[in-house]
Amino acid sequence: MGGKFNLKDRVRDPKIQALLILASCLAFQALAATLNALYIVDVEVMAYWVISAAFLLLYALFNAIIFLNSSRITWYWSRSLYCYLGLLLVLSVSGYLFSRISIGEADSIRWIYFIISLCYVIFLIIIYLMRKIIEYAQKQDTEYKK
Image (cartoon, rainbow, N blue to C red; front, side, top):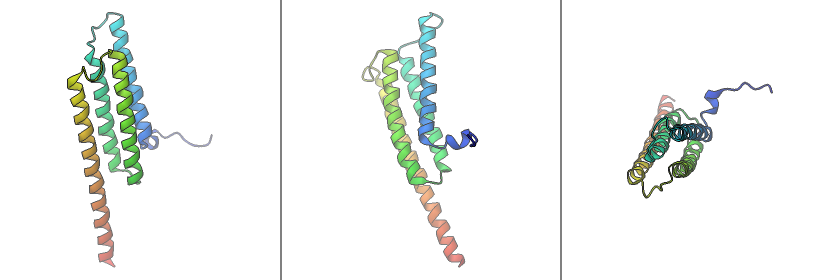
């Protein structure tokens, strides 16, 4: 098809990041469920929620790091937030389906989700403001040199 597949360029899209994280999380949860069903490992019901929270944290971390290098700030910002919310919903559903306990019964996980979400939004805001300040400083620098 002429075009070269470049994973590095594709991973810059928050939607692709979210899909990779979702697939990885579901694979780990399925592996845990399989090991539990085969009586190889005794997996606690909270483990599925912990796996979901861990992969949510991975998305937040990698997404924010890639945001530092993004050229389209507002596009990346809005798409990241929508993908995060979608990922939060889907990972919550998968945590429920694998564990059969609701997030209300998993009290500590509810707080972990809240803290990860709050920190993610705050971190994105800080990065966004840093980028805007740098752009403003560069603009002022070029005007001063004229």
